[in-house]
Length: 531
Image (cartoon, rainbow, N blue to C red; front, side):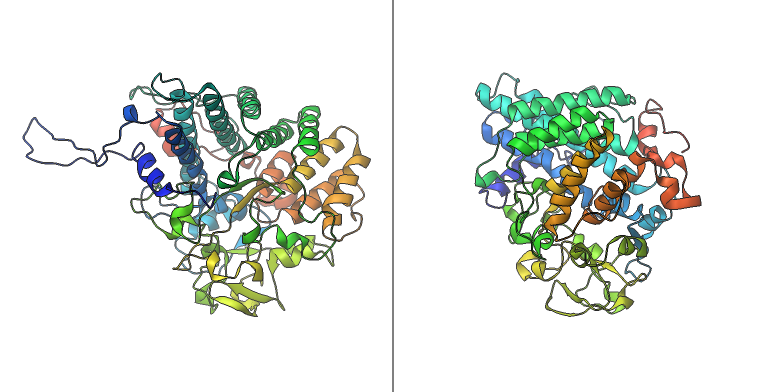
């Protein structure tokens, strides 16, 4: 996704479809208001050519980037998806030595499992999810608008890609809220925009149908200029993942075995045992590898070379924000004496560090600790890591380190890097496959996947955990540290009380619907129990 031409034009054209019309008051009288849009492109003039549909599809993708976005306007986001998926877990605590602790307060609340329906993170992510769904629905519906010049094959492909994105967003909403609304069409009646809760059964049926349609209509792979767009195998892998959450273990196994046999996905360096195998996965020069099922794409080094038209919740086109603010939130805080000018909000817990076995190279790749050499933007030669930069003595290193220290990985202001978010990796999928095998009584086969693929890739022998699920839970925690899955593993396994003790309340298995959405719906959307 780094080599597309004319994407700035795409940004200008597509964004015009979603910007609120600006009202210019000129010669106002008591009964007349002159309205003038800032942009001349209207929906009636758009959705004609394949390029139009490409642009609209990229706009649907762009909503995914906004999960980690930062904006001082509208939703006032501060990388909220990290607050939801990291601060809530036992892997991360909020670094009390961090900078800008006022803005950090919402993450601190979630760190303390003080979860309320008025919290900004939930409202922000809910908005981004349904924005993405809305944009996907626009693509789907306009393929049959009677005005476009698409061939039948092009219509099928665009509908398939939009259905993948619609399913992807609905699945994230299901994981967070359990019974979120199904938005299967564009609503146009301004007096009837609210949607009620769905049921989990209906959601699973809807999501899996969209993923099946996506599998049947998407290409097996894209040309190099479109790498990063979903393929049929992306859809099939997500189908298996959804089946795991549904606990339809046979269906999950069928989907995963299809992906394993036919997709071409593979662990990076899976057959070459060396210490840096795992670090390769997060190298910004090795994005969209054979291990990548789905990555959130970020631009760089020039901000206008990213087709996923990011930063559409802010009125100015931040050039830095076509990267991710991971470096700003994760790397060591300047206020604690660290170089690089970052904020250092998040600190790995001792519990996570202790989960790694002695000699597991994934610890060194994932976490900075005493004795390590620290790298960040502007610190390409490395300096000794100071445990005093963190209230736990640790900081996240995944996506960092010497591999990602070169200046071309960072925006000029140092507040963003261009390293894609590895949202769903083949290693993650293999572990879900192993889990489905365990749940169907095929534990020896599952242990072979864990030991001979996941652990062998990093040079480790058989798992120290004798029981299948214990081995699986251990491996997912250390393999996927700081990737967006730990919280949802805890809730679907029902181990919240084991992990958090007296701090746990079973209502946390679902997040609260944003109170703002319940208010807007006039009570049609029903809050989850306990909130």
